[in-house]
Length: 127
Image 1 (spheres, helix red, strand yellow):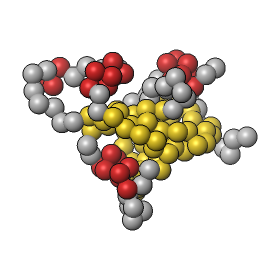
Image 2 (cartoon, helix red, strand yellow; image 1 turned 45 degrees about the horizontal axis):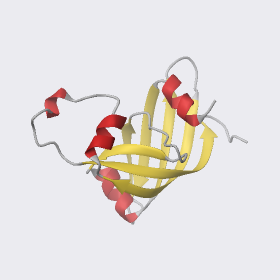
Image 3 (cartoon, helix red, strand yellow; image 1 turned 135 degrees about the vertical axis):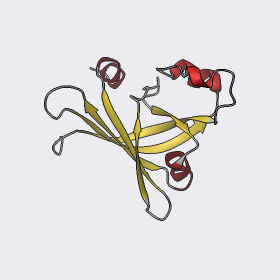
Image 4 (cartoon, helix red, strand yellow; image 1 turned 60 degrees about the vertical axis):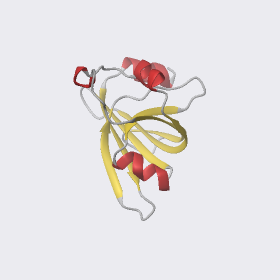
């Protein structure tokens, strides 16, 4: 099963961890990420702490815990490769639509792309 199929077929909780240039760590809940044609992982971000940290330290980790019995999921070690603010592309990739933002001036959203440096199972050392 491809990574794209994995995220399309599994629900769960995702946590993105980042750190600033001084090593101060932050973790935040994030949706299942889209996997792009080139194999990169993308995250839709607001201009908050996770996004701020990536400006000075491009490394991140994403933990995905699958819904269901037991401890199933994946861990990803990531490196930011680029970002953009194409709102049409961001809206197309969004899994949910926020009615509260209709007609308002919502805060900026960024589409941040990551190279997957390593993928491991949720539990254990992997292969």
